[in-house]
Image 1: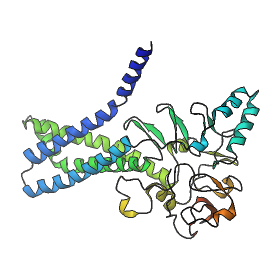
Image 2: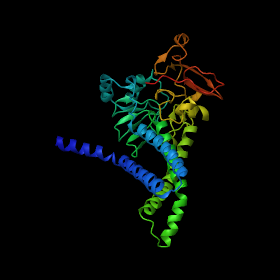
Image 3: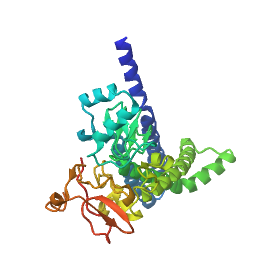
Image 4: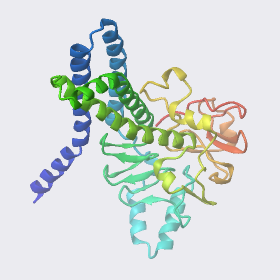
Length: 356
């Protein structure tokens, strides 16, 4: 029975890679259709060939780089400070009622940097992972673990899109969209020519089939990617995940869909960082550690302040820390609070917090 279960597990794990293989197969075929059938066999102008191939390979390289980063980047683990010890788990399991369990969780979470709550106002706890959930963290049933700032689980990358790879995912969407638009734009005139010859029963060989199909596929994916990409642009500017867009995060004061929003530019920097030269490259530049996030003043987690690792600190201790280590709560812009490094309230949030 054990061997059978193990075999099923391996089969399911292999099956999850099918969408990724499908994407790579489509990309591989598009490379053959564009480079060989279009540029080598169809286009006669040498300058036009060089121009098309140059930009095609740049977009393809950036697209594959971003896609690989999205697929291969491992989930950021939940810090140990949020894990419930075994002896505390025994107390939870032996608690006589739900109120007693909630009391235990409140005690365990009193020094943790959390502001999110359940609908009933209780501490969010995952009984599968046995952790108190950090803000914006959700359990993924596919990955079988809690994921920091989970956006969604994407079968096309066989990975969760979350804090650890959200920038890579956005660049993957952007370069995939540009790749499809570029192919559609540069094959349009040949699509029209081959379509006319097709309707007139003229033969153009295999090139006609590949280029006709390539144009249709590029348009189809471009339309789909366009909607998805600009929707996530909207989410970034409002500092929301897909899950938070459908179910606003709950705080002590109630639901607030803009609870983590610190202004559109700062929201953008939280994902892409402050180094503009790296914005378009799939390298990790996101602010924070995936655990502590800026919140609006009414959602602050009490009088405690938190450093970038989520530990509570006294105010006098904070005053002696370096700029990178210091963590204070202050006003940013029009009444927005930040838990993180000290920054000028009149300037964009540009100081990067240490990562876990």
